[in-house]
Structure formats: structure tokens, C-alpha cells
Image (cartoon, rainbow, N blue to C red):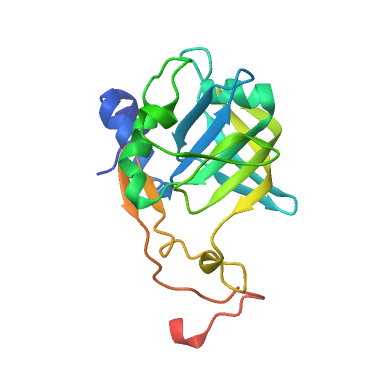
Length: 211
């Protein structure tokens, strides 16, 4: 298969949507929790969370265009400037997936999708209790992407909550022991398995064993 730009433009909407969303491979599955000023909680699944820096610890994610449909996550983040990012455990993928439904403003995905909220003192938005990796985020910036009307939301990690046994002495997180899920496309979920770990490469030092 060798599809040109014209081929992609002429393809059916569903085929093109599934194809282009799948070609980047397995992406992290995360639930973003937020709360409105009135106390209404919201939870939505995202596959676009990315690392932007370690010191300060910045993460970003892509918010789809606002205006065409309500974006309760976006509205809540702008109101309170805090939110949570929660990894999706494999046992919760079905519940997590259905948070993508179009719920009314006064409905909570926590309740409708049978996901347990969890709170910590001094931090307003809800975490996902079942999540092995929970991040409390503070909004730092929003960067409009003019090409397609999306927005990159950039936040700083204020809280990192993770079981001690998942973190190695060097700081690496063992995602397979945490049974963390990934997403391909819009609705296909995978479990993750560690297949190797190699030293940090310095000065183009490549071992003879791979040449």
C-alpha cells in the first residue's frame, strides 16, 4: 500500500480517521480528571499526553477544537487551572473508554462509567483511585495550533502518586508490573510488556555486538 495525499483525501472518513490515528503506534492511555467551580466532576480519556520537560516537570496534551461540541475538561481546567492525569490500568479499559461519550454538563463520568474518584488534601480535582500512576497538574500555558484548531495544554506536575514497588532506584517506572494500558487509534487497547532496557548512549558509543 502506497497512499498519496490525494488518496488519503479521497478515502472514506472512517477509514482515514482510523488509519491516521493508528499509524503512530501505541500511545499512552490516560484519564484526565477535572472539576468545575460548582463542584461538578469530569473525567475523559486522552491518548495525547506527552513529556515536555523534567525540570520543571512539564507535560502536555492535545485538546480537540472547542466550539463544535462542549469540552467540559477544557472549561474546568480554565476555571481552576488544576487537573489530574491518571494512567489507565488494563482492568479498567472498558470503563475508561466510555468516558469518551457525550455526557451532559451535570453528569459525572466517574458515576456513569463506574470509576472511583480519589482526593488529596489541598488539591481540588479528583484522581482515579484505580490508577497506578496519578499526577496532579497545574496549568502553565495553552498553545493554539492554527493548522487544525487544536490546543496544546501544558501543565506542571504538582503531585506524583505511585506505588513504591513500581519505581526502580534509577527512577524508571515499571509499566508492565503496573499493568498500564496503551491505545492504538481511537478504540483499540493494549497491555504493555517490557522487552529490554539499554544504557544511555553517549558519544556514539555503539557496542560491537550489534554491528
